[in-house]
Image (cartoon, helix red, strand yellow):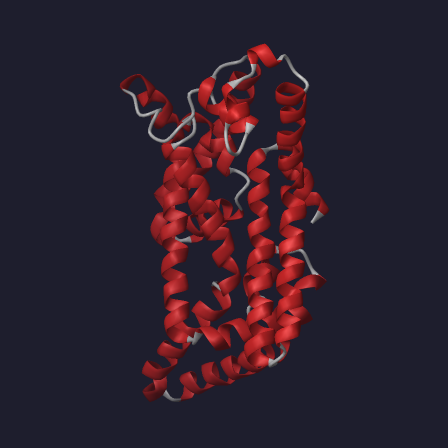
Length: 296
């Protein structure tokens, strides 16, 4: 929580990380209210999640308050800036709009086409990622009820998720330890039965699909995809689009999607293009950006 709050003190979009605590609180509150029949515990979980989210927003609010006190209250009253008179005086939003021309569709100009072309690789990868994981989540919700999914996710995180910070933990912590072990033993037995009983091939294929969905894309992926979708929409329609590369580079699904393409035998050409793009971005970007060229 402290680290995420510090990220918000460096960049305003760091405040979006509060959404992860909100999602976690909703999962545990649902489990406490519906599964455990403890409404008081559910309220406590929601309050805790709310306070954690507010803490992450504190650096952003502190900056706005600092600007308001120094410019609007203790500054020159004869030259009061227009944002000081707004119902919600936000210094950051005024600077973005007034000096940098940031706003919805304000960057959609013919002269900005090269910048859209510059941002097209990472935006394309982001859109692919959102579509890919949305399909996996759709399959997940079709195979298991939301109630069972939430309960299994909460139990899995409480027993396993905090033992490691590996990405595999995040991706595979949607089920409890006992469930994973049971599925593992059942999977081994099922594969042995396939070798001896070809007639059961059809049923086992359907089971393989369910296991693939359950183990490869748990509900814990959802807040990452929502986070990426919001930032992609903002980068394309609101911000200076050429900063999309470094703006979206903080989203883990970007790298999950890239690695998925690299290991897919049907996407070798796209995998090569991704490797070339990443290498070129590291080499050219380091040279151009440090010489004040608008590479990012």
